[in-house]
Length: 197
Image 1 (cartoon, helix red, strand yellow):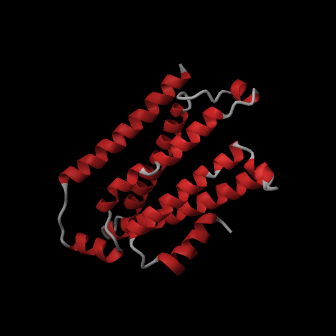
Image 2 (cartoon, rainbow, N blue to C red):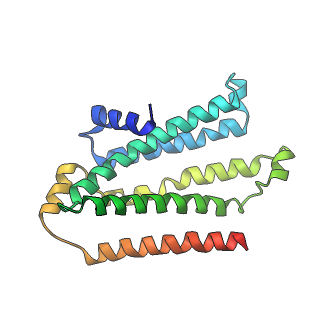
């Protein structure tokens, strides 16, 4: 069964009434743990435990994907609550666009960070994995950064509905979203053009 379906069933069964902030913090911490687990692969500890590289990597990736899908569920609910009647398609398109752009920017940012330490094929073939180790630690702990903004999230669907029913809008909030989307798009296009030249 696909991870999205598993995460939906797990969210519905165990986390539907849990604070969205708690879900986000918990899944972020779990994702950091799975990300740091890659160090076991880098240091070959998995083989000492009798776990082949492919099995370890696939299992680690599967659990990490499940956790990320679980983290995405409150976002979907939040957008459904925000969605004005008759604008479901537009809201879904906006959510999908922002999500896909965020994934692309994250991937491009990760590619850009490979220049911090030497992780070239030649270095890895020579048996020097220190750059991969350092980069894995750095990227794992960078995932903590968004937690400082978790207070901006409504805690529950009920709190989200109450905010919606107040009818208050924020020009600055909309402008910030617009600027982040434009800056993200320009960053990923600019970086890809730079890497092609």
